[in-house]
Length: 262
Image 1 (cartoon, helix red, strand yellow):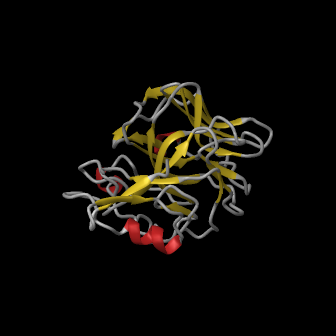
Image 2 (cartoon, one colour):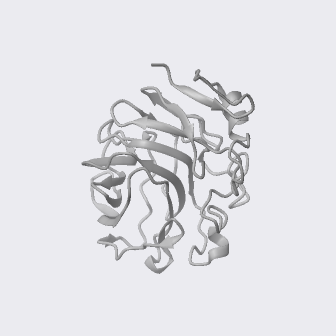
Image 3 (cartoon, rainbow, N blue to C red):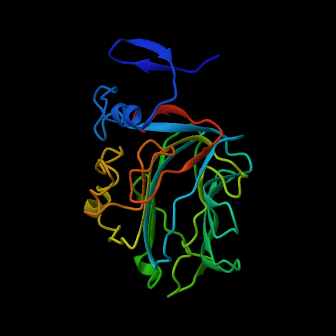
């Protein structure tokens, strides 16, 4: 059966069609949820856990500083599900392992730079916001927030002074190495190497998540938090990157879905 999308103006479910860039950005700005107190009409993309993922971001330099924000709604947590990985060596593994989080950044040779396995439980069919802010010169200036709650772990490995290994062109969202695919919805992917802020201050976190737990307005090109365009900002969690790097390539067929707060 062909998927359908709700049209709030016509109050009908209409057949979903492939959307070009203009379509997606127009939908993103549509107020389709009454009383929504965040980004109006923010969309997501559904990843089927079998075929779907996006690949490629362009050349990125290694960096000791990183800010990353992403909204996820997993619909299955059996086994491993990578929401940010790499198609080559396992240099970048951000995943759910069962119902637990795993954060890992490696060197090309596989040595751990930043690593914590199997911590902090997540729930299926619930939107979860993850905000990671890293300063590899100081673990006390590195935070992980889940739904605006500090869940920063005692890192199994924190290689002080070593830059995060980001200098490769084969980033993947929704998989790693084309495997362990994420099943569920992804929205508002933001990645900004070189940008650090004090995430322990609630007012700074409001750049990414409102006090009501909704997505904040990051701006049309993601520049609101840092006053400069990040390298990756995919508002609808799909291949359309309005950050400074190129668009991603889709494997499979992503389907638009209501975003956080819908």
